Length: 131
Image 1 (cartoon, helix red, strand yellow):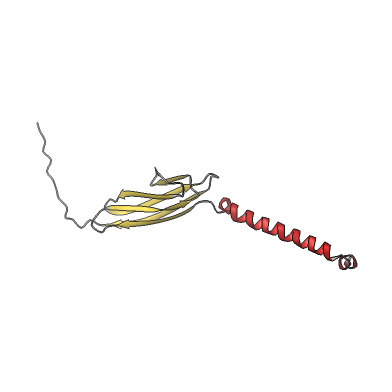
Image 2 (image 1 turned 30 degrees about the horizontal axis):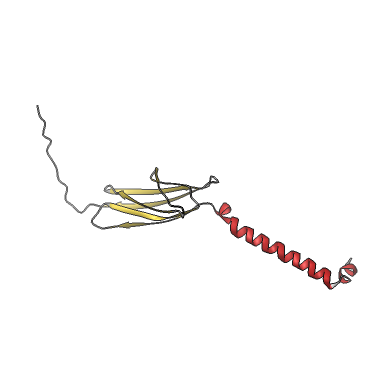
């Protein structure tokens, strides 16, 4: 068997090596174009908040996502997966949850935990009851 491999012509070796290179290039190209199926959804998000306001701007990118929800409420994304949404914080501990789903059913979730303390004094109002 080893003698038959050694006795092959240059033309045979060039043909075999070019086939190996061709199939390797096709395999690498296919993997690079289809790896989003393996990876699924990727969420990259940031929070921006002014210290004097209870409003928080949640913005980022949900790559490969077709459905994105913020605290259980669906939010809009553009064709590239970019999103931006403003939500209000209540005093105390808050959890902001982003959930994304792709067209193949894969899920991704990202959670932010925030503690918001109001700097304003509490005001008590008296109820006026009309009889």
